[in-house]
Length: 91
Picture 1 (cartoon, rainbow, N blue to C red):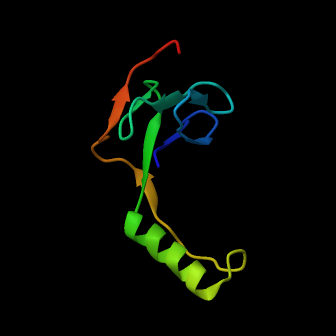
Picture 2 (cartoon, rainbow, N blue to C red):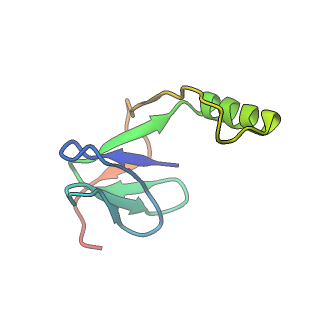
């Protein structure tokens, strides 16, 4: 899953195969294939610590407590913007 953050409205958008934008419309993007995305130039790419997400998901399933379990998962700006292609587009 690839996410982008808007520096203006602070909205976080989960990208799909179609163009999605933040609440204020400043940032937008979409998947261009199964791994890579194309995003607007002001978008801030976000990545999850995949190991922590997997651990939290497995723990929830093991305990069968989906709504009551709280677990911290780190999300941070992508340091190398891997798989993110920055450009403005009209689609």
